[in-house]
Figure: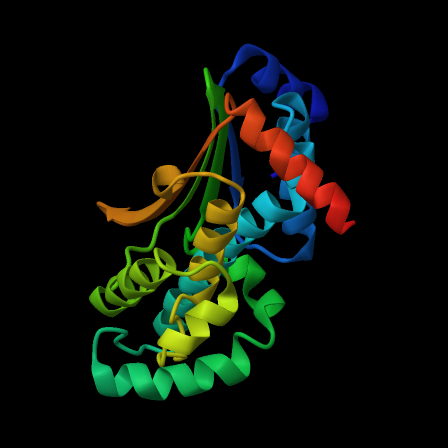
Length: 227
């Protein structure tokens, strides 16, 4: 994950794709991605949105890490993640053992090839960020996410989400809903974020229009008033 600052600056200035690979996503990795993101947002004049966009990226990357950790844990315990009974039993242990101490599994992620890849690029009028991990969404996970995204279409804040949602189970996707609400409140359209499975990967795609300067100025003014 340690790409030097000059390489990051070159990718930004030449509009090349910058790829960052990690095998876990804990505090150190989050800080590093924040540093990369801060450089890009400063370049496109969106530095005031740092906290908001950072939340969106941390949400999908954190979910990717959790999905990888879950599969890794089930493999190590020789449990079938697609068997409902073994899944339920495995999740009880997973929450107690792995989720509370994810740092214990850092080396195992790399040994077994579970990765998280970030791609950053300024592509003409668009700032693109892609987060990929080599674990496909299960049918249940995909169904939950689609339900939450549908809820997010009609929500303006998280309180709205809780009034219409009754599914608070593990992996319910409320963070994804909040991501949609944040982007909507910042003035980005519904196509700004997509998440899908392709082959053996889950891919989260964030695409931000950087040419809407009038909207960005209004957002910047609003954020300055809040702070």
